[in-house]
Length: 108
Image 1 (spheres, rainbow, N blue to C red):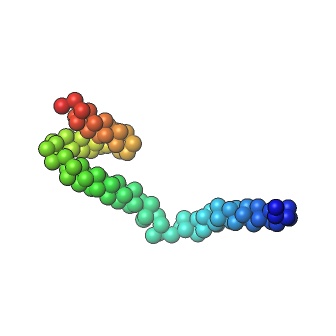
Image 2 (cartoon, rainbow, N blue to C red):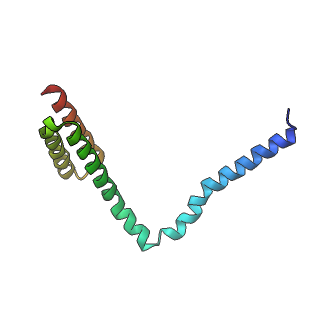
Image 3 (cartoon, rainbow, N blue to C red):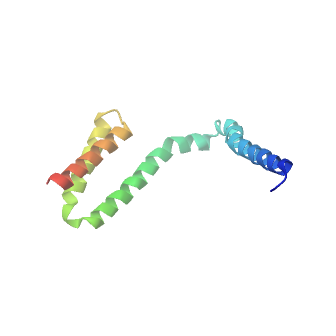
């Protein structure tokens, strides 16, 4: 069995590394908040990520179900409509579009 001081030293080193890794982002964050580049990323990245996600999902669904293109298009229209009509709430529009798509595929 290893020596107790060896085990305690290992736990202390692991704890210090964990603390440092968790504190590092907060130390870096302060100067980055003033950066125009980071502000632009914060403004455009959510929309860009949503666009990439939408394109990939739509492409995969259109390839997987070529006979049911109408369901994909209808659910996409519902998602866009809910997003624009409900103050751009992303989770609500995604939930509405997903629900519409699942219902269209299973009920019709």
